[in-house]
Image 1 (cartoon, one colour):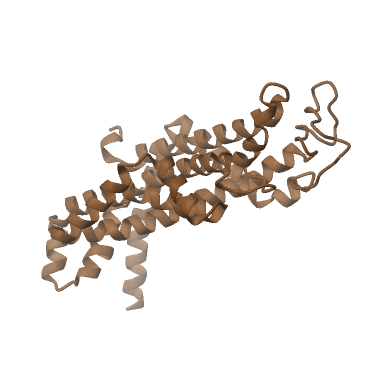
Image 2 (cartoon, rainbow, N blue to C red):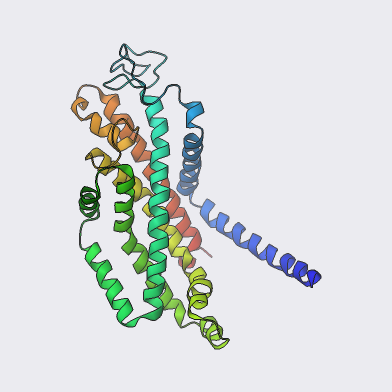
Length: 302
């Protein structure tokens, strides 16, 4: 028995390795996706090692160094490479720690919306009928509102704060995963392998989550990547409006909100957090394009 299992493992391992090689081949053909992946991994490392890399405490205030410009500009200091903000906090340290909050928001929001959306979407696509009708009408109502406006209303009800902002954004993003999962399940439900599993006596739970769902994951992975970047943007927008992370949290949107009055006079206080949001979202979107090219058979070149 163990010999048969070993033989099976040996026979499937090359197939898995071949699929990974094929995936990387199509992904790496997209230069932008590779650049986005490298930058995203850099951000992950930056977030993990922020306490080691950051030169200062992100909340420490240096009263003798208020609104110091970056080191290359006249009046800059070597100890504050990217300058300081209106209360003397080091911009570089706050940007580095802001990476932690942005990636944390992206992971939590995407996970919540993905798991909830998959569960609801599988049920809607598999059972159809009145269950599908009720679920999809609720999703349509949510989609009828602008996403940021709905998230803002939910945070206003729940109360300002990063946790409530993440919950609100996850609820707003969920309909996209529900609709995508439902469509994929409806397409797979009538396939021969599903019918064969049903004839063999598989229950509804096994059919939904072990037979059908694994074959629906490719578009969901791409959608999750794009939702990751949207979550970072929406969290920054809520922080800018004062409904997300609260001061003195070094979150990029909150940093922008605190620097509004210096838009014309102290460019680095406003520009640096904005650039951080821009390049992060751009890198994740480029990575999402590469995943789409690698996972969608219709886009693969012969």
